[in-house]
Structures are given as structure tokens and as C-alpha cells.
Length: 332
Ligand code: NAX
Image (cartoon, rainbow, N blue to C red; front, side, top):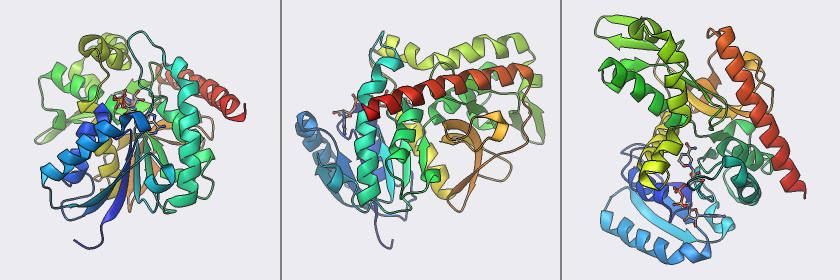
């Protein structure tokens, strides 16, 4: 088992964390051989609930858990951590736009960036889930200049999973038959779920999703709209935002970052843009990445149609605006 790694989950008393913590504790992220010490951060009014969560961590009786730290103090929460799930934020409620959330949430990520900078390991892997995830990750990185920018990522894996599942369902196949769906841009309704480069794998054959579905009308309108607004649809039905699926997506994201992607396949992560695909440099933008040795690399050479290019630009524009607003909040 070796040395335990330290893993922080913020918003630890919240609904996503409730699913996420048990999966981390079970070895679903860092492997069944890797023991963990959980660092659980939340705010003072949530400490009673967090106490209950800790009781349940005890009661899970999982051998990989070597301890936990329950705290309201960022300096304790981020001390020597190897991996960070930044989930804690004010969640979007029914009828609320992401923009309303921006100013409240960027302040949280400024504080946490500063704490990561001071207290975390320099190779810490940071996954931001709390919305607006891309911009929060950017702010967090900005305030943690001693940690490489590549170590800050935002979650669009839930969008990827939603898209992959919707395609599989339409074809009556299993999700594992659908490969290389890409989410471009912001985790918001401007995201572009792209199946142009995706394929359907069946034993002995591989076909593009476009050819398999053979309905470009559906693929370029209803499908995209459904994925873009899926979060709102879940809120409307459940009266609460996606939690079980969000936790699973966070597990998928960090697990792939930790152990790599398989040859020829890629996943989508919000990462610092380097100008690839004409995306403005210096945004946290969801891109197709392949991963080995715990390092992600932007997949190059994917075909971008004019239709797609438009969508890539639109979501970049939103991220540039968010960045500007966020910097204004931070500098105020
Ligand atoms: P909950 O409201 O259930 O939990 C949030 C928790 O964060 C609460 O316990 C709260 O006390 C805590 N918190 C607030 N401020 C904090 C701070 N400064 N430090 C530490 N903890 C703090 O929300 P939940 O449903 O768990 O969602 C969490 C976040 O994930 C929200 O921002 C939500 O919008 C976002 N989501 C992001 C998704 C993505 O794909 N990137 C999808 C799911 C989800 O909507």
C-alpha cells in the first residue's frame, strides 16, 4: 500500500461530495492499492452535517482510508495535498443563471488558490467542479503562481458522459461502444458537444458516429441542445442539481488524469489553452486530451468544420467575458 496520499474535497458536506467521498475512499480514483487521508473542507454552518459525513466514513469501514481531517480552515485543508477536488461553491438553483453565481464564487476560488499556493504539494492535481468551473479554475491558478498552470483543470466530464450516453441510447448500444466524444469550451450552455470525430466501436468494426446515426439534423440541433441544457433539465426534475452523476464524472476525470488514457482515445477536460484550434491562449477551455505519466496533452489534428468553428468561437467569447468579470471582482 505504501504511503497514503492526501486528498482534499471542498464542499465536503454537500450533495456531490456525499457520493464522491465514498468513491475516493473505495479506491475508484487512485486505485485499490493506494491508501488515502481525506481532507474535508466546508464552512462553519455545515460542520454539523460534516460531522455526520465523518461518522459515515468511519462506518464505511474501508481499509484504504488512513484518516481524515475535518476543517473550516483552508490552511489545514490544503496542507500537503496531492490531489484536490474543489467542489464547494454556491450551487445554481432553479431559474438562476450561472452569471449570478460568478461573483460569489470567484472570491472563494481566490482564497483557495492562495491556500494551495502556500500549503499544497507543488505537483498537486486540482479539479474544479464548483461553478463557474472553468473560470474558477483560472482564478485559482492565477492566485497559485508557484504551481504549474497545467495542474489546474475544470470538469466537463459530466457533459462528456451525458453526450456519450445520449449517443449510445439513440443507437441502442452500450456507452462503452461510443468513443472520443469531445466537449469544447465552457461548462455552460455555450459548450459544444462534438461527435464529428467520435466513433462507434463494435467487435471487429468501427464507424463514425455521424455515419451510424445518419441524421445530421438531429446531431447538429436537438442533440447539442439536449446536452447543453441537461443540467437545467435535471434541476427541474429533481429540484436539486446533478449530484450522483457529477460525482461519478469527477471520479472519471481524476482517475484518467492519475492513470492515463488508452491508446487512440481521449477525454475532455477544461485545461489552460495554448492557442490550439484557434482558442485564445490563457483560458481554461475544455479540450480533447490524452494522458500519460500524469500529464495531459491536447489532441491535435481533429477535424473542425465551419459549423464547429463557430461554436468553438462562441464559447471562447463567453469565457473571455467571464474572465474579465472575474478579474474585476478579484481586483475590487
Ligand atoms: P451543495 O450546495 O450541496 O454543496 C456545496 C457545499 O459547498 C456546501 O456544503 C457548502 O457549505 C460548501 N461551501 C460553500 N462555500 C464554501 C467554501 N468557501 N469553502 C468550502 N466549502 C464551501 O452543492 P453541490 O450540489 O454539491 O454542488 C457543488 C458545486 O458543483 C456547485 O457549484 C455546482 O454548480 C457545481 N456543479 C458542477 C458541475 C460540473 O459539471 N462542473 C456539475 C454538477 C454541479 O452542478
